[in-house]
Image (cartoon, rainbow, N blue to C red; front, side, top):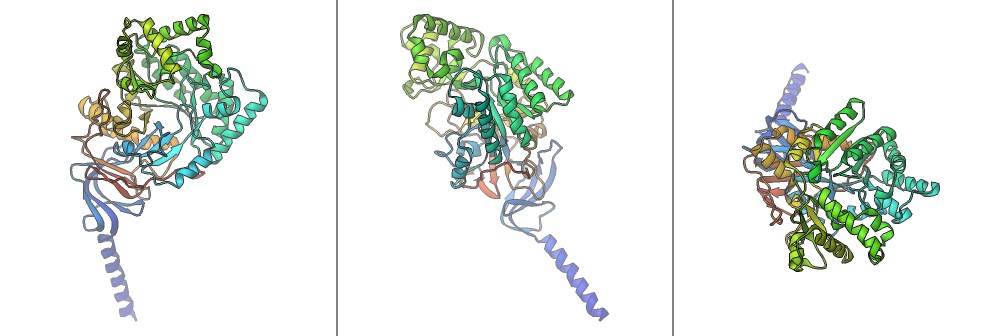
Length: 525
């Protein structure tokens, strides 16, 4: 009896050791340098994936797998999380190639106050599509306000405010990760801080966050940051100053003050963070140069017919070109998308003025801004930021990375290069070439820091049990290729992207794999 028991024990240990040394995985990554997303120093280890999960990290050279990847000389990182993405074309471009090729495995949509509505219906529709990337959403304040109040320049009635609050709660219950505002845009620009605080409280009660395109990012920037901090305090909500920047020549250097304000607020116990894209140019509509009052109610065209009002509108545009986003130079205003005249795409406002055989003055530029808006508007790139501000904001420990890019495909318009190159640019230009960040810091800003902000516990870090979202790149070659004059270029150096355990990029080749999912905020995350 004792002999039989002894043999059984020996067989058990023999079987167990064999199982441990010959584990079977779907994907096995050997010899890689693992940056786990926490900001800690890297480790040399192997990594095993089964189904959609990371199963084990360690010495796995004797294990077997359906697919083995040699990670020698490569960085194994959590998949990048884009904290500010314009996913509006997602139903037309569900595979989101421009994101996946950057190493993005999760994109947060609904920024700047604009989001899908009705919220759950849209997410349900996406869930039935073959997505190339994981997506999550915020509920947009501008969307809700427009639904309830249109484009009216006034405060809400008590009944209207309660309806907006119900809509925000509804979206939070349906899986929104928080509320976004675009206080520079219509109709959010007409909202007073009390309205924003009340709606933000609804998000806070559901453990959501608040992200804000501030009321001003040029003149008025400091007051706008103060407003966001006050919203955090009064609504008791975590805040992200999204695509944080100091825009317009007169505001260059102001990031020293805004970052000090963030630090002071955090020292008082407020949870303030930022996200940023690594470029010195912004991108939005031509209407950002037009005084908001001129757009109220959607009556811009009728106001232009009034000579007195037109003069006031033109003066406001001239002021913004000289002092704000226009950067004091018509050449700093570049058209990205012009549906009514595609020959202007990639050209500047100065180019257009000259084409019209007008003198290239700020006044004539303002006249064409009016014409552009009457024609239906344009997508516009504004080269009006200072590199020192970009670097200073990037180095702050509470800054995450977000592209602010719109899903793009080759040949479609003249987009901002951030749509193709944000994450490789940080790693290639700002880490390897300029040494603004260490590689560990940069990866943390793209992964673990962002996942923590969203409250997502099973992504953003490489650890056993987490979802198998991974980006594997060559740290010596990764770089963006997209430029302002030739934007439709994919980056280099990203060798593999794994999304929910499926290989989406294999040895640099894009596979068009529909591995993405809609991620909704729940009590668990």
